[in-house]
Image (cartoon, rainbow, N blue to C red; front, side, top):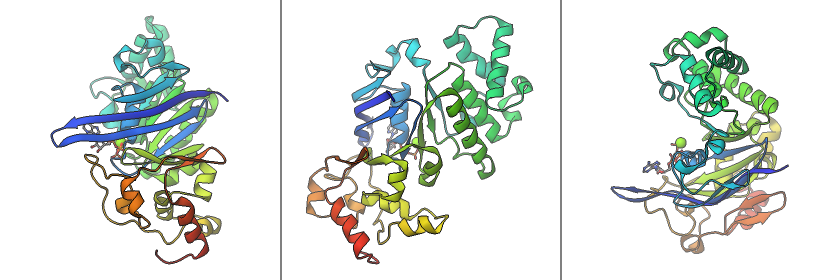
Amino acid sequence: MSEILKVISLTKHFKSSVGIVHAVDDISFSIEEGKTIGLVGESGSGKSTTGHMIAGIYPPTRGKIIFDGVDISVDANKRPLSVKKKIGMVFQDPSTSLNPRQTIEDIISLPLKVHMRITNYAEMRKTVRELLEKVQLPPDFMNRYPRDLGGGERQLVAIARALASEPTLIILDEPTSALDVSVQAKIITTLLKLQKEMGLTYIFITHDLSLMRNVADKVAIMYLGKIYEMADTQNFFEEPLHPYTMMLISSIPTLTDEEEKIKPRGIESLGEIPSAVNPPKGCRFHTRCPFAREECKTNEPKGEKIDGGRIVFCHFWREIKYKLTTNAPEKI
Ligand SMILES: Nc1ncnc2c1ncn2[C@@H]1O[C@H](COP(=O)(O)OP(=O)(O)OP(=O)(O)O)[C@@H](O)[C@H]1O
Ligand SMILES: [Mg+2]
């Protein structure tokens, strides 16, 4: 398997009236072609900012984005069209990401004109029809406006639009969280089917960790602009290593006895998420970590690589894990 995307020390700082927002700070990861990486974290952890930099909405402050072997981090505006068309993006809320004054045909045909250079009207309509079919929407939706469609259908249109330029990588930023639960499963099923058929690579951004079990091959946990743990999905759920991951997993409702058995216990978070302006020194999670010690307040943890392509950023993960699995205390 070849790596389609490699992100190295990616960083984004925003200037704001209250100071510098450390939205994303020195994160690195890679994705193999045809696979899905899940970026998971609470609100403000830098998930969307990461997606936006990769999609070229704005350039990184520092770091590199290597796509298909090409460095695309220089300046988002300077990306060649041949690269731009290969990276698609689907946003959280289709009611704001689709222009209400355009028909579905207009919406989907724009990337066909720009990226696929289709100028022939009959060919354009045929391609729009095929794209609607791909996402399992009826062809006559072409003549409708976004307001005529339900939320799930609108999101399928946004997916069809993202597919129009024949991308290989699609960034899905909370693609189901603005939708009714009843249509969420349909969107996920369609995305998985498209991935299989077309060999697409996904960056799936969500705050819903449980969704990752069915969707992602690999999960990266973000907190205040940093990745704190990354692992293959199965390892990740069966044996979380970072106390923050344990905290997140222990708050997911379990479906089976097996899941209940392996769920970490005795871990509870303390307090609120700090601001991304002046984030805590040392480990950014230390203000909420029940196991934090002096070292955590001053020294930033380095990533420790573990078997199976895992990486964890915590000074004391071994001890914490040992404590939690051997004593099984109510609280530490
Ligand atoms: N354009 C911007 N200017 C200033 N600050 C920003 C900007 N975009 C994002 N931020 C800040 O950067 C941090 C990370 O934001 P981001 O939107 O990437 O988080 P997120 O993980 O996607 O959160 P959510 O789950 O709420 O979507 C936040 O503190 C946010 O307020
Ligand atoms: Mg976001």
